Length: 535
Ligand SMILES: [Zn+2]
Image (cartoon, rainbow, N blue to C red):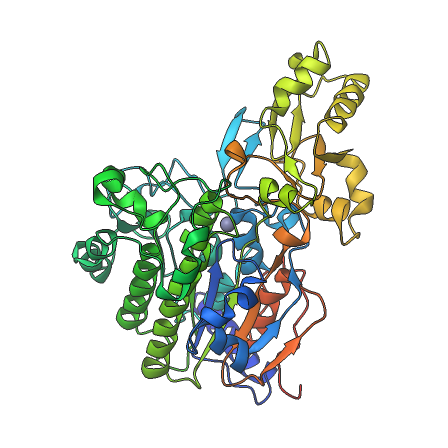
């Protein structure tokens, strides 16, 4: 007689969850589909800089018909891709969600680990190791995880070229998480999520879509032709296989040997992402009933191309013109398939990007490159320190447990003298500064003692690590150019307006939780944004 009780209890619990979900929103009906879009490395100012080149159906539609938060920022360091996508989905900081960088030094294994690597997982949909990934390092639940807990029939799906973007947006409990295997151009997954690709994903992979996209030259849009004399700049790196950073790109004679890798560099990679997202909505019937679904899309190519060419390049401008057309296509499809009254789109970015320091210096603006080899520099400056410095990564210095205090202090002083380093803090010094909304407070929110160093450096404004040959751009700092990102909410439930006060990217997930009538992700720290009309 006792046996049925747990079962009945579980049914009551889940029914109670559903009732709460409905009543908590008052008269607000949750949308049938939420689409969260992250444009990797998109700076907030691109909405203005490229606005006149955009059509009416993409970015400008979100700007004019949606709610824009024109001062949305990350509140932690490092502003990298893994942490950014984890913050969007969990509403939390690295100190709670665990994603302290893209790669960090793992003390137990004494080696660097990648934020979504998982050797115990196997690739699904391909023969290589590109699918040996999972969210094993992500400690917190995501919006999608909470949606699945509240509505077991809801779908939580993510699509991106980069594995970490798809995985960290979707989280743990997902119906499909797909990323690109650059060796063959297929969208793949991992055994963490599924044992086999759905038939429609395999069919998409076998279709002519990827070959159609990759075999076209990348031409400059006619709207930018008048600026073509600015194409070749000294701070731009070249496209794979090319010697000069000039249009047209992707000549099969020079770039062909890079195969499907080029999808990461070509705007065609975004077209393929949108085509795959549309196929996902179509095949998974997203947004067609009253149970809400979540589709996460990250556009990875703008980051990979941005790193190469830099934020002032024609390649960046052209990428966004073409991405705008792809967004218009996606929104048009959503209007027709799901109905404009039934879906909500949120668009943001995982981080921004810096001015190229060479370009900045030409405008008399300070900046530069921090040496890539801090470890050697410290070991040279502090004789005997090589016995104690285990690794230097992301401006974090990992010291062995037996490092004497005076050595730690000498290493800190040596690091402070490296050009481009503003200051260096010990891990324990930062925690009292946690509530600061800038510099050291942002560092503190990005740390965990198991995954971060003993000494943590803060870069000077305009200075950056890892900028090979001072070409292109990068990101990672607490400063506006990296921390400030676009944030737009679009849907018929919203009254269009622009909100100028500062908000956090960590606010996105708790806000969408309210919209969906579900609990916020378990480690979320964000506030609910003012998106609700008259509420
Ligand atoms: Zn990124």
